[in-house]
Amino acid sequence: MHAARVVVTVAAGLLLVACTADEEPAVEVATAGSGVVTQTVAAPAEVQPRATARITAPANGRIAELLVDDGVEVAAGDPLLRISSDTVDSQLAQAQAAVDAAESLAASSAGAGLDLAPVLGAFRGQLDGVVPGILDGLQAQTAATEAGLQAAIEAVTATSAAADEWSRALQAAVDDAADTADELRRRGAELDDELRRRASELDDELRGNLGDDVVDDLDFDVDDFGLDLDELPQLQLADVPQAPDTSSVAASLLGAQQAVNDSRQALRDTEVGFADASRQLRESEEELAEQSARTAAAQAEAVGAQVTQAELALQAAESRVEALEVPSPIDGVVELSRGGEAPEAPDGAFDELAGAGGGGLEGIDVSALLGGGGAAPGVSGSGVVAEGAAVSAGQVLLTVYDTSAFTIDAEVDEIDVVELATGQPVEVLVDAFPGLALDGVVDHVAYAPRRDATGGALYGVEISLSPVADAPDLRAGLTASVEVEVRRVDGEVVVPTSALLRRGDGEVVHVVRDGVAVEVPVTVTAMGDEDAAVDGALEAGEPVVTIGVERISDGDPVPS
Image (tube, rainbow, N blue to C red; front, side):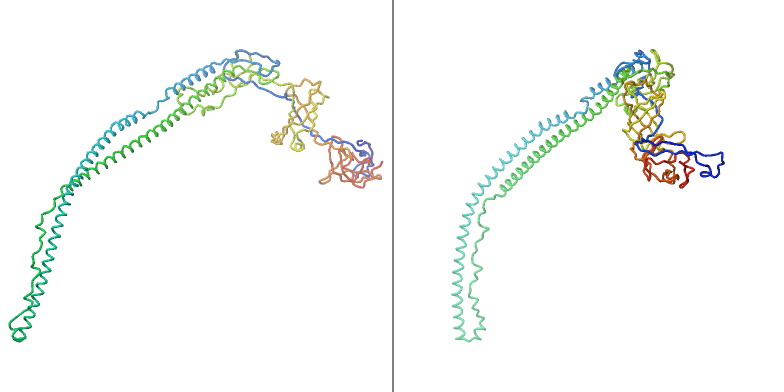
């Protein structure tokens, strides 16, 4: 049950002192009820087909064949038109020439790197041919020197044997001579002792007979009677024959030994040098192989990049040739273009792919191959699209509209957009079909707004329409309005929205009790177009003031 409305006339003297008797203001009273209150957000909108595809000219040229007309329904993939373009044909020829040039460059550069293998091979041949001969000569020389050394050793051995025999005989003679000398010395010593003994006896006898003074005067010296053993015959070794002289043989032996040592050292040095040279040669060959591999890889990569670049340009040109036959990207209804300027492509859009220096593709316009350049000079695209018409790249030729379903594009004020969320139900009213309400659902709420002429923020809202059996013949751009249901409350107390009065930060309702207006603060839980669900100190069935609320104060009488 919603609020029931009644109109009550209140005496002027009670309500407005300034009023005259002829100005009796009316006060309307309605009964608070209960029920469901729906709160909505209204916004202007526009009908749009589910999808729109604008078909543009892929290149400068002419329409060679137009396969559709206005209003024709097409399926995705159906051919729409074909463009003839001398520019694209020239681009394709240039791209193919670029690929041929790059592949020729790749073939000519294969194996063209510096090959040092023959030089190292010749050096190894010289090394293997010369050094072994030198080693053989040194080995022969060393063998001959060692043979001479052996002969010298044998000669010294023989001479040493004779010298040993002579030394043994000489030693025996020396030993005999020493024994003889010892015997002579022994006997001389015995004789010396005997002479000295007898001289001493004679001295004693003379001193006893003649007296010491006489004997002293006689100058008698016992030592004069001794023997001088040092004057005995000595064995003179200088008179002994010398042993055979082996110094020359020894010198020869030392010379031979030194020659052998020198030959062996030379042989070792040569062998070490040969081994070092062989090792260095192997390292050079390995390094050469690695360097050759790196060089070949770098050359292959560079040439491969050029070939790839040329092939990409060819693929782009082939794609542009294929693009000259334009199919429909979607199912829908065709509308031919009726004029419009063709956009120009940005300058230098393909400089990066063209590359600095051309990469071996000098003289070939890679930017042109990839579709660079703007509209053809003097081509504006004005007039209805038709066969034979000149077109420029990027010019819109026709549009395909998918009318199998429609969406609604609405714009919601920033104050209301905070109430919106996806999935909320929507009622759509299309101006072209009065009295027809379509159902929809919020699909998307924009995060960023656009600014209107006054600077206000408007947020785009996309709404999908629910299918209906007798759908109207909608078209793109039809104006509409939407009401989005943002809240639905089954309220225990429902009052007319006109009964609400703003007081400070809240709302109040004037309830008529015992003929007197009582101001009751309330909280609005849902605000409909005509009714509002409220919470407060009032009940369903109580009368509330709906008209004249701004002139009534708490405690004013309200006649029934």
